[in-house]
Image (cartoon, rainbow, N blue to C red; front, side, top):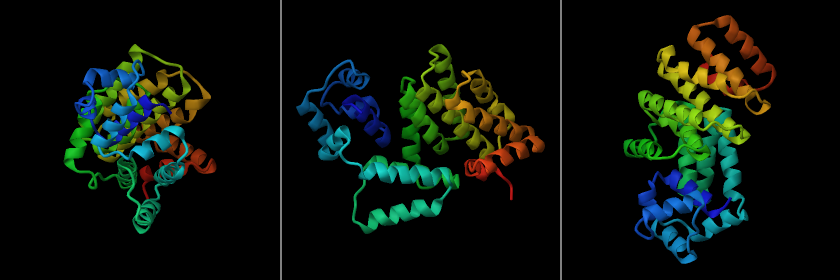
Length: 268
């Protein structure tokens, strides 16, 4: 990971616009070029930028050099707990951090809140101010893999109608600049599936997922995103009330040990 990528990741996790991140240390336009990788930021300005926002400078450079693996391991545990819908594990991680007296970075705290929101389908732990800031942040972004990923995670925190508009905006951006890059295809596919999951829990009509189904079916047929096409078919069956097709896909996922990914949609 380089400086531009890490700065952008930090900015996304705290919910800053580029103007807020620049903080008059450098101009907004210059900061924008730094994030795009077309300009290099002076070391003194970089340190000042980090200090202004109370980011730990040493942690930033450790992450840059990939020498600090502690938080990455914790993040991996959070992601696994989220994917397996294990809220008890999320609470365990929170307790361990408090017990050890660790003051985790903002991005890790945000990761914990997001995981909790996805598991419980409740955004109560995230303040309305933060939700509004997240929406404004995405609206002001140029669509790329990072913003696709951020929306894929933050969609749980949004009003479903706001989420629908942003999701459709992301699709249109991809249609204008299609890519065959596997990581981008995977990221935007996750975004579409996560959105459809939110639609299911919000109990909206099928019209909310039509563009997502169309979008996923328009993507190249590649092994990297084949699984998401199956999940797309499952959600389409949910909204069509096609129990037979649902049962067939549930059986395949259960045999493949991936049932936990749709467990929250299966009526007990």
